[in-house]
Length: 318
Image (cartoon, rainbow, N blue to C red; front, side, top):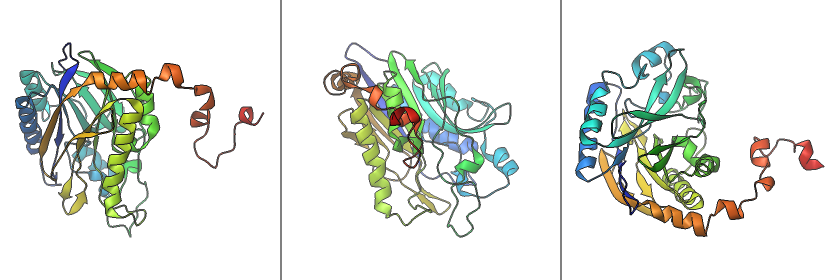
């Protein structure tokens, strides 16, 4: 990313409309390249693409795991099918975030995202930690949510990387609902957190009103941006994928908690803003000054307990 003395950068979020089962990788990559070029034309320095951007949201399908791996996982990155996106990024001198299904050389499977700088170099990798859904076959459900079947829990933690003097962290989809996600990165001086998501408009586990899916999506990022004094760029894959609907609502959120840019539909769409990184500094200095006001000795339960029903550690009972 390019920065200057005013600490302003051009941030773009590239929302994707549906990617159906029949869509080829090459066709999807052409869409990504087109949005990358649009973002560059709008003077963006960095573009955020969605989670599992190269394929349909395949965890909705109960399939043979061998077929899943063959059809939807990437054995290397970049690979020949995705190389045009990297080539365009190098040509345009623009960085990006990309989510995809990763198959490691050892055969491990992760829901992964990467940070790519304006020279088309991969400088950071994240593997999704908060995997939602289930691993069993719910035959009565209208669709499945099998991230716990098809992926392992990420093993790289929540990192922060320096991209041209901007400290960037990343996460994926369900991670955005958990406050620990943002706090761990803000404690590493993150200024910008980027993420992709695929969020069904229907919750198969309970009768959640559809409007709450978007409401909760917005409120967790607004609160987290404010409480951690960070900018957030969130890109969704949305619309009806082979008849299964996912929410839109891609957005850029300021450290004030305000939404400064938001998608207007459920198709491929680029939104952009020139974000002032010094706004985050202001909030870190005057509201959430961690060094002055945090008392981590009183927060031990956050890491010592998994859930509210767990017994208190002996040290706490003394």
